[in-house]
Image 1: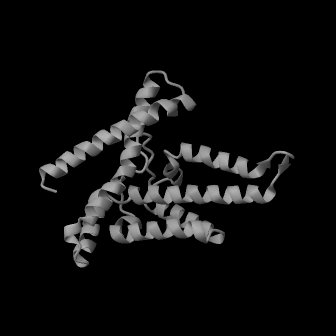
Image 2: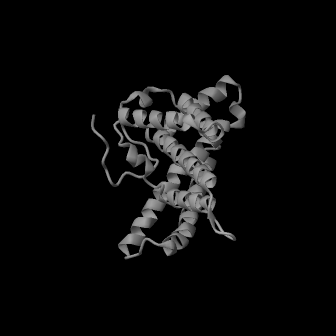
Image 3: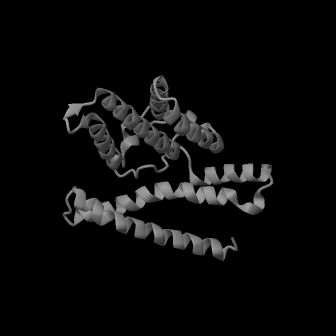
Length: 212
């Protein structure tokens, strides 16, 4: 089985494949993602290991190197380090809180695994599949007039759109000789938000032109 090694692969974007995960209906995958993302913060303990192993197995079966699921997660990793430090070290008087260290590590691991679950979901599921599955559920429950499926689809689409826009702006920053420091995030985050707002406005105009 070949892994996907394209360095240009946008985080949380769809990748063509034919593994088990690709054959599961989008609706079931979405339910599984929401269920695991909730339980992982409630149960913790051995459940974290079970989810982590499941993600690795499904990732390998889909032809995706598990490490690639962390692409785009650098800010999350920085946040995790900060959380661990805050939970571990206490001042006045200075001491190392071992219980806090364990709690910080478990919470950080929970966030990282949750991030990879989302990345794997979007890597094996297209927005078209998600919308189709949600529309079918909407019809089954006679909620066609409310357009819930459209709202959820647009909300979910925002996540991969964020990474796509961020990667585009980050590449321009690097081409201009920008450094990878805190100033980068201070400068690029407002531009990313502005770009996302422009895309949202374009989507709204397109939907309005179709009478939605």
